[in-house]
Image (tube, rainbow, N blue to C red; front, top):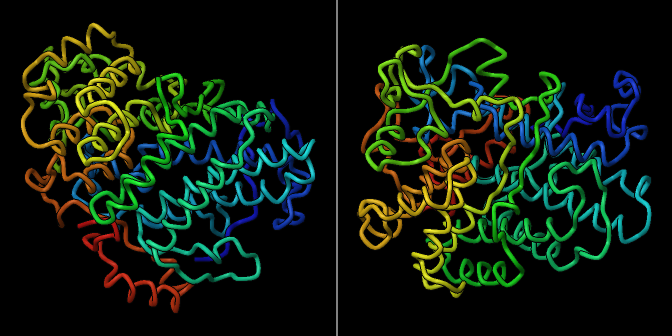
Length: 483
């Protein structure tokens, strides 16, 4: 990995809030962007993170294809797990870390922290600004370590080390949880923070504390199969600190639709581009039809024949004959979703089943989760109650063990959050994608990304050491939390 890029991309969104400088002037000193307000860099990091996790673009985010919630129409390589065509492993790495001529999410957060002491007001505001930025760094490293395994971490942000070593994934994960504990303990709910440049929570410290606790819950549950003792302890601590309790807590990045740059990346890919590269996957659509899911018209349109019809993963699907995405999904202003209440309740339902002391019953949390998802997309509590009353959906009568019951409904709820849907399938094994693989799939469903090709050439010694520690650099190589 080349060192993090220090060229800062300030989206048009920022022009109204803080930075009115000509960004070309930053080329004067690409490592020391002293003329850029720190909060603007934080906002750039927020937007880049939301863009990268929201985009359905080929070569960046094939995760919806992995999860079979979306699939491809004409260009079907990623649906078949052929990742060499568009270099998704390279692009995901470079967009999150940063690389030559490409600003990364971590680049912006790291440099925001460096500059906050220059721009922040009182000491308590500065403290909160730094903590909130650290929470977002932790979130970004969480994505990286659970996509690749061992990654650069302790040396990744050093300006004096152009080719950093890779750290052990489990050691990184332990440190991320420790950092999160510190953030939760130290954030000051009574103090202000950066304000409007934080467009997710507007600098509200109490909201960020709840976000951090919910992220801790999520991260802890990833360890539940391989380290249940640590998982249980951290889950209970997270719940005690205060996790999300309603959809009002959701961490959503608001796209304003005033121009292409500030519009939701799904709209950019599907409407502004005029391309029809993706369609709903039949795997998801058929399951929702079978269960009379009230989210069908909220997610999709009907096909020309009046039915809901998805494309078959791995085949050349005919876009005009299929369902497509609903108007709200294709809206310029659809928010990016980084973490939400429905996911929280699914995690709590699972925690109860695993014997963790989080209060309530698994059924209560499951019902809350399904209801929250339906209401998130515009359905009603009555819709949710009718849906949950069906024997195939009700927690007491739905097929399978708790992993299957929760896993299937969580997959439906996470349908538009590709990385998270893929991760929950990797973790819970539900739905079992390998039992119904895409047509022409060249491997089982990928468990990770291989390391970028640029790492093999630019950072060969550290790359070789990482591969040796991981055992192999294949998409089928298991990560530390996998059984």
